[in-house]
Length: 244
Image (cartoon, rainbow, N blue to C red):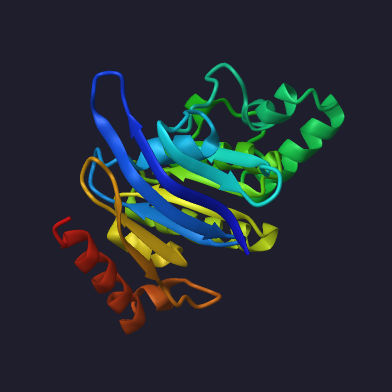
């Protein structure tokens, strides 16, 4: 079932820069879809439009039924530096005025799922970059979203940490039945994570390729070294290099 559909979406900024032109695609319930393209092609703008943080100048963004609960993970963890990990993970629940005992329990459970048991009282300055991002993801999951929007969340991390978080994200999305729209610059990351990769042109951003990938249910190091994964990367890289 198609959960989200964009039809002829366009967006320009006040300075005259046209960020997006005639963008259209659908996202199925439970799909993991990556937006891949060069810097400045409008990937982050598109994600913010889906989130409702911005309004398109043209076209339509529609949901099947009522708009579901959304979670948003930014490129930077955006944690409150004065608050511990539990308080940071609890933030969306506090904003919804959920009772403190329930909010604490849900935030602690989300931290546990991200491997942060024992770090509930740690401040952001006491955490590594990967741990900060785990808190950021836990914060999004604590609200029990149906759709998770992720704007290059692992771009600043070293490759081993990035691979571990890729695997953890896939497992969490599968367990919760979450639909993910994921922005990345990485051919490897998009090829590994995604059911589909939407390749965007340079600005103004348009969808120039929609690549469906056949993925094993369980991924990991064996898959990263497989001919099948190498073929997926070749397909995605070829589409990215085709002139728009």
